Image (cartoon, rainbow, N blue to C red; front, side, top):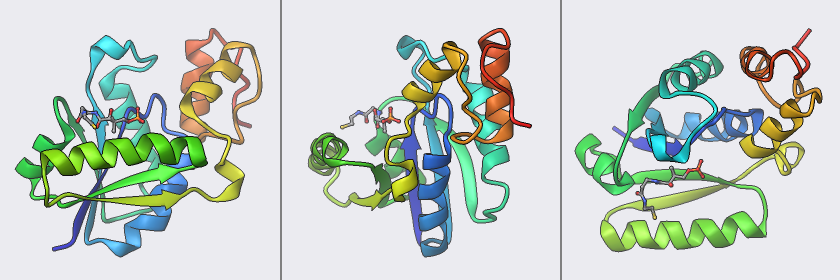
Amino acid sequence: MRKAVYPGTFDPITLGHVDVIAQVAPLFDELVVAVLHNPSKRPWFDLDERLDMIREAVLPYPHVRVDAFSGLLVDYCRSSGILCVVRGVRNHVDLQNEMAMAQMNRALCEDLVTLFVPTSPEWSFVSSSLVKDVAMHGGDVSRFVTPRVADALAERTGGLAKRHV
Ligand code: PNS
């Protein structure tokens, strides 16, 4: 069975993340979207909220499962029988950071392969951080996230973020 993990913070999931999932899901029998549980990062959305938002976003993809992990990604992969890590790459800055992570993960677990997936151009500037910043200042984020996430952002920002209509 070909399994891969798409790990991340997903605070919150964006349409850029969904684009990566859509590109990769057909290549594997199972793709696990794995959310890092790391309260010290002080996410906007708690783990359960992030998991729920992702579950809703990946409904069209039957082979995609959503899970949480804490600790090292390589340990999660070992215990789940996963040999492939998927990471989206938007630009050369991402590539530089992702190279270091991929090589560190490979040094920790030599069987682990990282697959870099270029995001589609329309999402190359979209990140969870920027989406939160736009929402916090009352901007319209509905083009960058699912309706469910837009609603959650509107709720979190006291209605400042525009809801999807
Ligand atoms: O969405 P993000 O924040 O870019 O995801 C980063 C993530 C969660 C994939 C990375 O920080 C991670 O794997 N953390 C788990 C701890 C770990 O394994 N650290 C060593 C990685 S080189």
